[in-house]
Image 1 (cartoon, rainbow, N blue to C red):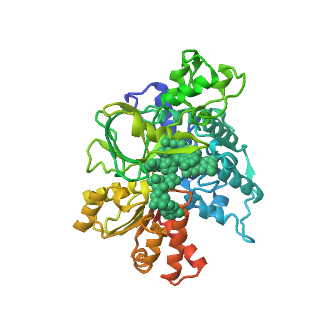
Image 2: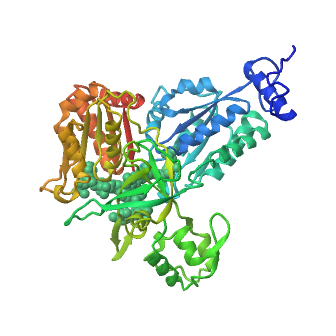
Image 3: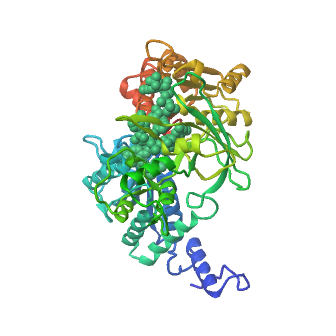
Length: 543
Ligand SMILES: Cc1cc2nc3c(=O)[nH]c(=O)nc-3n(C[C@H](O)[C@H](O)[C@H](O)COP(=O)(O)OP(=O)(O)OC[C@H]3O[C@@H](n4cnc5c(N)ncnc54)[C@H](O)[C@@H]3O)c2cc1C
Ligand SMILES: NC(=O)c1ccc[n+]([C@@H]2O[C@H](COP(=O)([O-])OP(=O)(O)OC[C@H]3O[C@@H](n4cnc5c(N)ncnc54)[C@H](OP(=O)(O)O)[C@@H]3O)[C@@H](O)[C@H]2O)c1
Ligand SMILES: Cc1cc2nc3c(=O)[nH]c(=O)nc-3n(C[C@H](O)[C@H](O)[C@H](O)COP(=O)(O)O)c2cc1C
């Protein structure tokens, strides 16, 4: 068959580039043979890159790898685990699965129904003929539950008869390098073409480096640090603002902001003194290079776990530094809409301060922002997309928001956004904190929204204003029939704040409301909630 050139000879490409592009396009359009690395449409090997992701890391990685794999010979697509049935796995045959772990060893929200579906007694699917590999994202600080979700899925897929083509890799917070090796090995195993694999991953990593990102944070100026609690409060919550001027950066409500932080110099000095090290001694930095010890400990290494502890006897400086973990940026839910605050991003941060065994501790990031970073000072920031936590595109849809404490952050942003976009859907906010008089965060703005009718309904739960605890879920249960009515009208239901207790209790309350007000059995209520999740009408931003 004669191949008709698709890229003309006078096009601004080298001979090699033109040949490759012609071959690639011919392959895509099925008009002729493809060059090396670009298979014809017919011969493309199907590849599903499935992700279980709560705060977006696994999702972004899956999407990047799918784009790269597509350009290099695979018929690849990325899909959330919430969109997959076991039958899809059997159909797809080649599966790379990336999942994080949340809560205390739990599946991320979008992996729960998938996990249930491959664990059903008696009706579990047979996955013979399916090839797979798992990349587990996690954080070693979680100890026994490190990467547990990925470990469980990996083991279960094997039990069901799927063939593991590459060993699972368990990644700590810095997952890029491990993900690179894992995907290179997996692409090789799937295609038998090592060149395809390594180019794909290198490009994926490079792609992330364009513009400001976690790897290249924007030095943002602190423009606001306002206490949100008043006298008599036992809490210290701050409204924090950064300027985006000069960055061209933008964000969507629901996203989080990554903030690079520094350790408290007093804490660092105490750790150095306890070991009798020379603060000026040169030490290796986690990403290469070297710096004086004191500087390195303030800016580059996690030291909070060492503070107030007895020093390990006779440890050398080199061994001490080798055992340290890299200081990680912290994520914060964005509390503003850029449509209302041009070139600004706002956060709502609870300063972490507590004592154990008589030693006072302070959270690294929250007290860096509350106490140490001065107005007009800069620190590195980046945006972290949260595609699972979005307002409904249909502006007429009602939204129900449950956000006690700092959980209010994304809902201030949602309400600002709904105002700016003149969304006509009803808005219902559940807010709670310790005491009305001192802890009603964003009181004036919220009350103004109520008075203007922008907030259709506000329910507050101040836990320490009376003998018995009143929490947001108490208020939900009291308003069960109206809440059920909103759900039946298609309301989107959002939860933000404490993951350990609040989010679980609110979830229980939601199930209970669907049973009592909706007249459903426990199983039917569970199915209703699963359906809400599938329709992206139940989203959580919990930490
Ligand atoms: C997606 C996402 C969004 C978030 N949004 C927000 C937000 O909007 N606002 C907000 O304030 N935070 C938010 N967080 C939490 C935030 O990222 C930080 O974890 C938080 O500020 C604490 O960080 P830190 O560096 O100050 O504390 P760290 O130095 O990391 O110390 C925290 C650690 O101290 C220990 N600790 C804390 N309290 C106690 C105690 N009472 N007793 C014993 N040990 C204790 C625990 O081990 C805890 O993990 C969010 C997290 C995520 C993942
Ligand atoms: N990783 C970290 O170190 C870190 C840092 C900051 C925040 N957080 C998490 O984020 C959460 C938010 O912190 P915050 O200070 O903004 O608020 P918070 O501590 O969650 O408190 C907000 C309100 O929620 C109430 N509450 C307590 N248990 C609850 C439950 N089971 N169900 C519903 N409401 C409940 C509290 O009541 P009472 O206090 O009166 O019981 C308070 O009235 C924290 O709980 C914490 O888990 C973690
Ligand atoms: C509230 C919370 C709970 C977490 N629980 C665990 C855990 O139990 N085990 C673990 O290995 N990692 C845990 N992690 C770390 C996440 O798995 C890790 O940050 C991962 O990169 C997140 O990926 P995602 O954005 O795709 O969800 C937790 C993180 C947070 C914020």
